Length: 462
Image 1 (tube, rainbow, N blue to C red):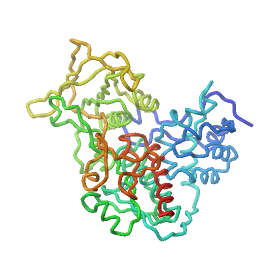
Image 2 (image 1 turned 90 degrees about the horizontal axis):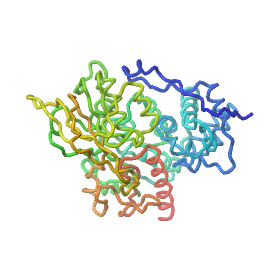
Image 3 (image 1 turned 30 degrees about the horizontal axis):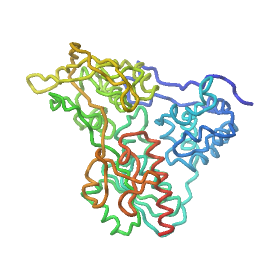
Image 4 (image 1 turned 90 degrees about the vertical axis):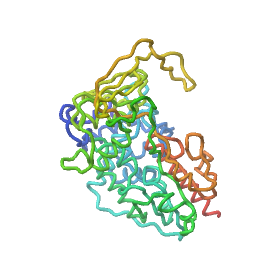
């Protein structure tokens, strides 16, 4: 019998005043009974609008139906057909603007908790199943994947299932890309990422770390090694700054550096050898998910006051609603309609304050968002000893500068045909943030999936 409760089952979470002092996962996950009951809220719509909202095309009603029937292994098998990283997606995907945003139940009430159920099924499988993946039959062809983030891992997994011998090349010492260096432990535990990657290894994917494409090897050398196609999923790890006075002072970080030191290099652990500032008052500039991550990490690192400085209002914040709510609960202070114009330093060359201007929203710009305008004479000073810039990233130029014939746009993003990820180089495909600039995990996965299908079609007809 369908569950007609208008409200989705709440997600159990750590108490805000406890979790803002630790790096343990905030959301605790559904219990078995919660998951079964929530899955019964699905109406099994004939036209499956939720599937249209999923960038990787998971048959959502089918997997929810299996959860409602308490057949968790079949539910996982359905997820695994289309998603290489279900435990990750269930935690970090913006379901509210994708699958859940299309849910019929959400028209009058709350949508089905699809993301929470995806997380539950993936976790249940990991904790209860001892079944090993079946090694696909090899077709004798090799493909190289650059980058072990969500787009690279998805492309690698799909290609391996098709029988290709896939090697993933990762520049850092740990595979996972943004999943390990960018997203904090309290949102995405790293052992979960490691287990997802281990699942890919078990179907034949090789992962080589500490390989910087463009330095250790070039794209042309990958072809010389016998690879018949290359997928570039190298992400967008080059931070942007505002170019305001004082930005070079000690205590000014990019969000990428700050989060990498904490997430990948474990600076939050006692005795860590990774240097990072334990600041008292922190300003995070920006309003996206990365800004929320940086602000919440700063709070956990012991800061008394953490400010999110954003030039538009609360309703314009691009971060997920859930992440903003969690940040507010944890004591993060939002200084919206504010924009930094200068960083002030002390006699030692370290940050002591930032000067901001108040803003107001004017007419919509080309993107349809109301343009922030300066309020004249509205300058104010915010006393901080650390400033974290989270205003976007762009792709590192190393690969494009060492790959003849690989064209990029004015932002440094690799140009593709848009349909299947084919670049301006024959047999070289690309997807994820390296093509779009910084975006979501699931969109990167969708691009990896499309490119894998295109590579398979190309190599079959080559």
